[in-house]
Length: 113
Length: 113
Image (cartoon, rainbow over all chains, first blue to last red; front, side):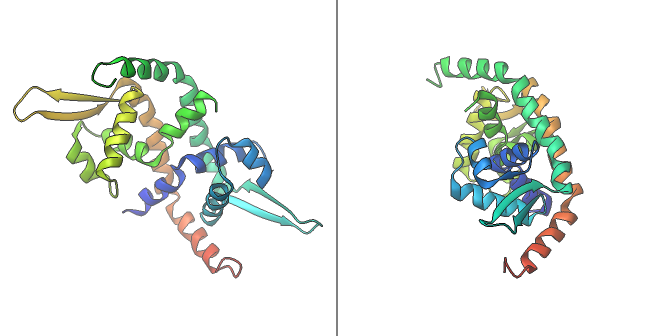
């Protein structure tokens, strides 16, 4: 599998997209991210954040306070991906009605009932 | 979960992205799609194609010949998504080296070894 396709599999993953989109607005802590992203499990958020950190898209900062505070933000590289992710989000909002209509038509078809 | 996020989960799925990207070049048969998309199983290709068809992004055509020929192509709505998907692919190609470097640095860190 070519390396670019490998990367697309990573960033083209729904949880990666949701995290990049959410961090696009702010630097957030783990619990804030978990609350902001509907349906993501603790395990999935941990693994996806680690993958994004490894790819250089997200920066994890441990603040030397008691108790220790950890937050996450997009890196410069992560910010270059944000534009495409926001475009995908806008596409979804702009075409929601057409897709809802297509789903209703599909579900009403005799061969798909 | 808001409807737009639901749609993003659908189209922000790596297999949906790979199928839309591949169909962006041509109308293809199932076996041609399977061959073109590295790592996708028959079951996953069938389910993802059905999801994209239901969302109105892909059109499935059964040609009345013997043996029956079935092919898939992007609809007008699917073509509106192609631009964003190609941008994601270009982003992956353009930033492959930076990501490879970030991964090497991450893997070399004592706390991640």
